[in-house]
Amino acid sequence: METLTSAGHSLYFESGLEALKNLLESNKYSKVFILADEHTSEICLPVFQSMMDDFSEFDLIETSAGEENKNIDFCIGIWKTLLDFEADRKSLLINLGGGVITDMGGFIASTYKRGIDFINVPTTLLSQVDASVGGKTGIDIDNVKNMVGTFTLPQMVFIETGFLKTLPKRELLSGFAEMIKHGLIYDKTYYEKLKSTDYLTPSAEDIYRSVEIKNEVVTIDPHEKNLRKILNFGHTIGHAVEGYSLANDENPLTHGEAIAIGFVCEAALSIKNSTLTKEELKDISTYLLSLYPKYHIKKESFDTLLELMQSDKKNEDGNILFSLLENIGKCTFNCRVSTADILSSLDYYNSL
Ligand code: NAD
Ligand code: ZN
Image 1: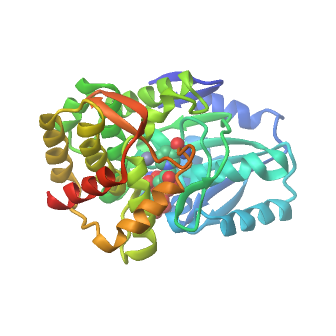
Image 2: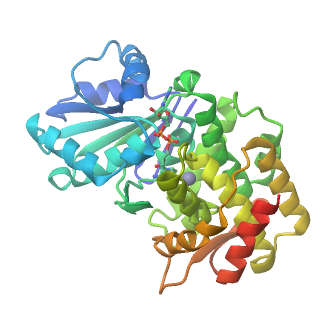
């Protein structure tokens, strides 16, 4: 479809194969590594290779799938593997997978020998519309999401919606949450359009609109000094619920399921602490509850959730800072909110 210029690197949408082939065939890189998880190495790697004329000049590094593996132990293992393979500073790492692989692979590449080049080939809806764009890399420490990481741009991002054909329904629903977020914070018309879209079959046009919104915001504010903070809408509470669920639930919430809860809670906060109307809150809650399974936020988890929110990187001077909706389609940031209001927003979600 198109190429977007994203803060210094190219973001290819259903295009760019030639550019990628040329880059790999140039003498720029001494060695090429592909990082994939157990699923993407089996399902997506053959697709990627066939797109690339049976490209085979690489070493594969495979990890276990899942958020619980986005951690320092896996990084150490992968750094050591790179050393064993004698990767030098002219090596290239291709991250082939979802947000776990692009976040962790980006972090590994940005730190290995003080940084080697990497390319993101996102294969989940979530990573295509969000995680692979914008240069945030990172890993979780204990239950705190993305606690350690860097802002490092990939050489290029290569988005091919064909990868989504094999993605499980639950993962499509997870990625759809980030698309809804883009509508909520930036484009009401897009939000309304998504409301009548089947999350199982999002159009390339809709996916492209999300990539465009994310790219526009991060290009204006790459290092999250101001505007980029709006992308955190739903994530302060969402990340805490996700971290808690990961540590305590047998079948933990996906990132999208957790932030959908965060959207409802933070929309509730937006009534009292910003200018969102009750009608808009009702609209958002009804829509999200019609899509995402209802989760019960246990009363006994409230203190832990507050602690997790306190450890959020976005905080300043010990205050938990929120990005809140002014209305559907517009978001503001750096909002201070009382603990009582946060707890009421969790109660509000439970009451639905
Ligand atoms: P994920 O990487 O765990 O992928 C989900 C599952 O889908 C995995 O089991 C994976 O193996 C499988 N999979 C991937 N592609 C597939 C395909 N094409 N067909 C079949 N199965 C496939 O999870 P995710 O939802 O992609 O990403 C979540 C992560 O992204 C979180 O860690 C979150 O913090 C991060 N994130 C980062 C940013 C950022 O700006 N850096 C933004 C949003 C989210
Ligand atoms: Zn997210």
